[in-house]
Amino acid sequence: MVAKNSAGKRSAAILDPKAVARLKERFQKQNVALVVAFFAILLVAPLLPGFKGWMAGQAALVIVYIIAAQGVSILCGYTGLVSVGHGGFLAIGAYTAALLTKHLALDLILSVIAGAITAGFVGMLMGLIFLRLAGPFMAIGTLGFAFFVGAVVNNVKVFEGREGISLPPNRIFGQVIGDTEFYYVAVAFLAGVTIFIFSLVRSSLGRALKSLRDAEKAAQSCGVNRLQYRTLAFTVSATITGAAGALNGLITHYVSAEVYSDIWYSVDILVAAVVGGSAMLMGPIVGGTFVAMLPFVLETLADFSFILKGAVLIAVLMFAPAGVCEVVARPFRAWRRRRLEVAGHGTTPPAPELRVVASKGEP
Amino acid sequence: MASILRCEHVTVRFGGVVACDDVSLEVEEGRIVGLIGPNGAGKTTLFNVLTRFQDHDQGHVYLHDKLIDGRKPHEMIGLGMARTFQNINLFGEQSTLDNILIGAHRLTGGPIGNLYSLPHARRRESALAKRATEIAAMLGLSDELDNAVKNLPYGYQKRVEIARALAGEPKLILLDEPVAGCNDEETAELREVVRRINKDLGITIVMVEHDMSMVMNVCDYIYVVNFGANLAQGTPAEIRANPAVIKAYLGEEVEA
Image (cartoon, rainbow over all chains, first blue to last red; front, top):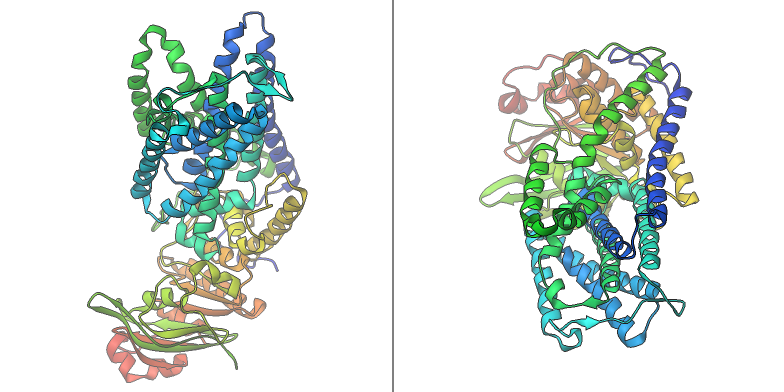
């Protein structure tokens, strides 16, 4: 069936759809190349001459922040829900891995996976509760969850409270590994999570999550089961943050309530996700790096990092609510759109005439 | 003819306000049925009851003679019923193609095992995209597939909503004011679209509409509600001649 009504045509028909498709494929490849280049830098970094032993541990911590922010970004970016309690999942991941490492001397990678799964399972249960709450109430609920986890690790004996759990050296296949090896393990996890998110947001699953974010009722009318999909997003988000928590505990060889009962972890990873731009693949990478590096950059003024983080967060929310990466990407996207138009029409089409839109859809 | 959608004695109360008062209607398969009434007559509430976005206090709703009271809104498309919304309710930031693809959500087969990197998921995606492209072509949206729908003119957005409803391969579509806010040209186009969906695809249509020329020209059968209750029903000619309808709603005779 072909459209009969050509009366309402807005723009000239696309003359060369193949050229458009080719160009789109090229842009897609460029995006992938950007991410691959980023990982290449991460892999080569420890080989550079200025790279010292202690830096590997710090670099691994930055990676951990990025992974945690990626976990949060699935929720705030693609699902449109805000959790201010993801530090709770970070803690669950860290303590699960720490206890398994201390008491069972479990392999590093298995400990991290166990931490992730435990956090994911708790995330699923929490999701089933919190997702029945609307907007701000859900945020308060997640905050309460983080405090709850904090209270548990402070007071339940097995978690050893503020004394903390000191951990033996990390092992992979029975071999003790150093910070540089650990750094590579963290990069591998980061790569896995990045590929997973890339794949998720391009799937029908990602589309359904975004549709719930943009217009809930319309999404339901299309058959999207709100509770099922949001619970799934919450679970995935908690799993990834739990993996970050496990890595965080194991790299520092020390897990204590002093650190994990603090609400600042929750705030930090939320800031990391929002500042970078949580609906973009590079967003948590940039945001996580920013938040993790800030205390180092400020050196003796590290105490001011809270103030600076707050100021940056407010500035981003005011001037670039979709995140810093979105602002940087904007001119590139506009340029690509022009390229596509030229490819499709053989020439730059005239600007479409302005029309008054009678009313706008729900935001 | 078999009834595809039926409601019996539906009553909805919002506190002291009775939005629907013992309303019954029956939609026969293959028809275009209009639901009209003055502002505040309870049309939209009834629409939401039929599509399960609103719970009713009394009465029953049947789809294909199956009771659907207590079912969830997201289950409706799986039972063959799609809908559009009164004020355009699209995924504004997303492209026309993605909007239509979300309409095909029930054909994607659940949340697990759909990751883009899996080959079978990608095959299904490309099949769905092909189908979505065909639907877009039918509605004259071929050149807009990659454009964000928030940038489209109003009449186009209305068509994207209909395209999205079609993508779930429904047997029945409920249109909530399909031409509200459209100019004459857009109204004429949408009228053709509705006719084609009904004739070429054999999809039953129920529409709430204020535009009398649209309703009288397109519908096979019309239900009139007033103050939340059934007032009249019949063919367009019968409704036009019904003194109760004229008195309650039209004020004077309608021009066709």
